[in-house]
Amino acid sequence: MSGVRPALRRRASDLAGWPEVNRIVHWVELDCSAHRLYVIRLRQKSSLLKVEDSIELCLELLDNGRQVAISCEFLATMDAMEEVLRKKKISYARVDGRCTNNSHLKEAERLRYQRGDASVILFNVVEGISLHEGETHNGGNDVPRCQIDHDLRWSAIQAHQIDGRSHRDGKFAQVYWVVAKDTIDSRVAEVLLWKLESMGNLQGDSTKDFEEILSAIQEKSA
Image (cartoon, rainbow, N blue to C red; front, side, top):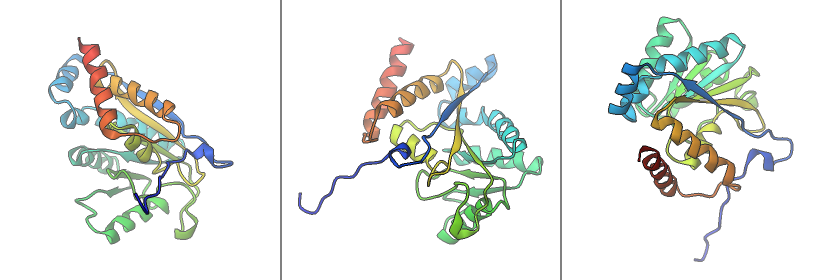
């Protein structure tokens, strides 16, 4: 087709001197009651069962002198995290399609985090937001960043894009995936890690990722 150019998504390590993203799976133990609820409430409601675990990890990272970005998929989860942070008197910003429904509000919240006025940011966008350390043009500070992926998306490309909100522009940010043990979560994480390792230039198909994850879950359940 005339005028169509192929595009590749480049890894950070393809650029000289840029660090490769590093992902740590942060395992969460669910008790018997929570495990039953997880199965019943898979996806949105099950996300709420891990809120305290993600906030606990966040507080630990803050104590170690980091600013923390927390990626969520669901507004209800963000509301629950916001309530906990507020009770603990932790300064936070939030970017989503409801609270920051225009570009001005979105940028204002983002800059509060980038400049250190908020030590934590909750966000649910996949692209179009930079949360890395040392943003020179907008007064960003040099406090090291970490990112917690509370909800794993069922697409390797989306997972890569989300991890790139904080780990970007040559600035390293440790990424943590919050995963519940012995659940579908753990199988999703396994498949995504394999996909991200094997994708090379990061070309891929989100629909195919979903099909592969679903197939892996069905095999394990059989």
